[in-house]
Image 1 (spheres, rainbow, N blue to C red):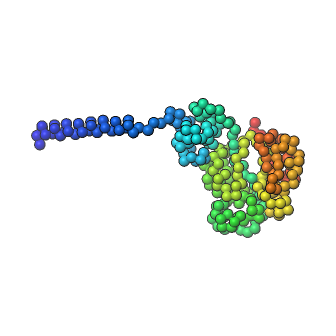
Image 2: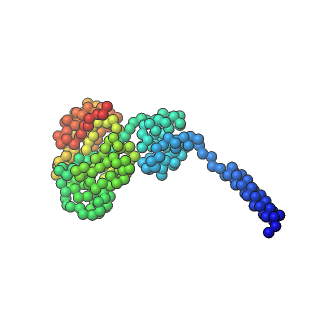
Image 3: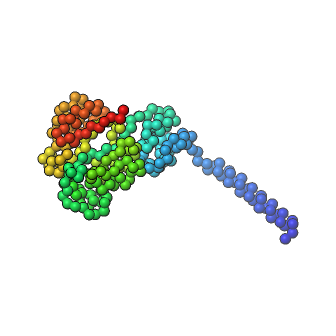
Amino acid sequence: MSFVSILVACLVVGVTGLIIGVLLGYAGKVFEVEVDEKEIKIREALPGSNCGGCGYAGCDAMAEAIAKGESPANGCPVGGVAVAEVIGKIMGTEVSTTKYVAYVKCSGDCESAPLNYEYHGNLSCKEAVYVTGNGPKKCSYGCMGFGSCVAVCDFDAIHIENGIAVVDREKCVSCGKCVKECPKNLIELVPYDSRVFVGCNSKDKGVNVKAACSKGCIGCKLCEKNCKFDAIHVIDNIAYIDYEKCIGCGVCAMKCPVKVIEKIATNK
């Protein structure tokens, strides 16, 4: 092959590459998808856990939703107040600074809640409920202690202790995975600053509750009658706390005859 042929071939390849490059650059400009600058800043502010606790597939989807106004600035449970405030400034909105933690509404530990039978199936709450209906405990509302909630927690914030799930308040980021996982709806998100909780979820009448668990709420209404702030009421045989009204005085806990209402010490 002559020098001229080689030169021509190189020129053809070079020109072809140049044309392709120009065309690709033009196509890139034409079909470029504009990204909201707010979305980029929000994504940078998010923690990057991609846990799904916000209800979206990951932090990218969450950032897009916030930028479009489809999700609130405080929608990331993992980031908490600090991240919410940053995103609020980006969006130009005020955000709630209330921190939440998970709470397990059951006090039926191994000593308090007897078993109907021994369960030897897969150690999964959902599977145990599916196979047996309500699980092996006499209380059909109580925590079975098989740890499905523990398995889905990415933050080591919930563990099985003496047969029931217990939340580590300082590790919990209120992602809500344990709430969704519990087949008995025993776990709820409560304000971190709250100090009084009802550790029971049974809707049975008092005599039946006592037969199933020595620490169950019997619906006696002593808590309701002694609360000066109208912050606790017995509905369907179980006490509920209105956390917007509760000041954490603990009178309901002191009056509860079965001590199913607990008052924890403040960290402030």
